[in-house]
Length: 492
Image (cartoon, rainbow, N blue to C red; front, top):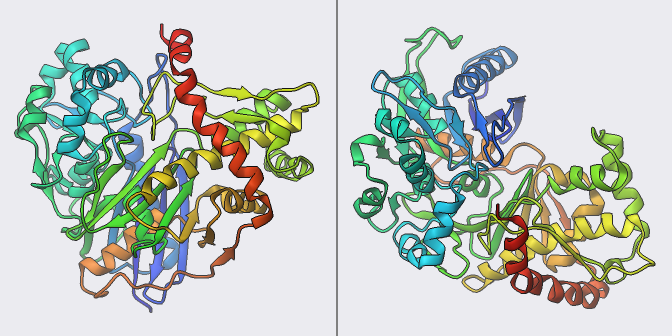
């Protein structure tokens, strides 16, 4: 029986578990979804106990499918989540996800006052409503009783870790995405905690991403007959770089899922206060630098619903969309879209931003609007790639996410970025990265070198560069030219 590790990714919309052998073979790949509710406009909440149950169920399902226990289980998790825990170790709030915008006025206040730059320079985290830093301040100002009753402010991974091991611990990677972590000292930042009116004791103990705890079936919830090591792991974005082998200079990782992101690895923090590129920890020697966008794969169902009245789009609807927009030429005959339909994070960090179509003429059809919507997601990611290239020369982009199932979208992205694209295996990159980090944490692997499976390589069509560059030059001006009008229309 070949040794294997389980990498488990606790995502915003689902939990994914992947069993990876030392030879790089995936022998199990499972996923279970969980709901998000919005009790008020801008709220995004989930049930932490349901997510813990799904987490345990998936591990047991992998154990059943494989038939024997792994050497180690590694954890990946979405960033910026927040749960309030009382003195009895019980959640007294829902899980508040990264997408929750209730703290937007807090973040905006820091940005307009100039404080955001100082906060960013200490934490390396962009000042936005997604940050637990902003959410805690919002809670202090708007829900004083809940704030007072909270003994611990933790993330979903910390909650799961506590349920397993009865210890409040957080890895450096998740900590670095809170806005409360000092990147240079690698500890909770006293100045930032003071802004939140909390002490370090109301947060978990920070530990390295390769830290291990041993599960001896003390809870009798995992169907194992031996002790298993758990590696606390890192955040999903950092582990995605590891999972797609994008840790070397000159290589970026790009993901389009519900949202999207572009990231590179660095041995040092790279601060850019204008665009607030994030600086998150992968391990003791590696930072992951990059920028996220709010509007990635979620633009597609919006297009299908808005322009084709497909309220519950099927796989066939998605396939038909990408087949039909091929009839529209690159650049959409002069139509450009700014896809900020859910506000935007990098590089503008503006919860009140919104979408814009420009260049509309009588000859533009529905298909033009649909294609412009897809092109716009590629322009948004190109915008971040350009910011990263101010620090690194990027020659290759390794891509993952649900969008890789569309050959048309892949080629469009390749042409717009004007980079060589490596399409990585379909298995979840973050879960894969968690398994690799877990193997290394128990010294089965000495380095991160690991088989990555079958890779498809795409190259840009140089004949389209003049067209796409013209459209992109317009795209880059749209936010700055219209931000004031957006705020008039979107602020209540």
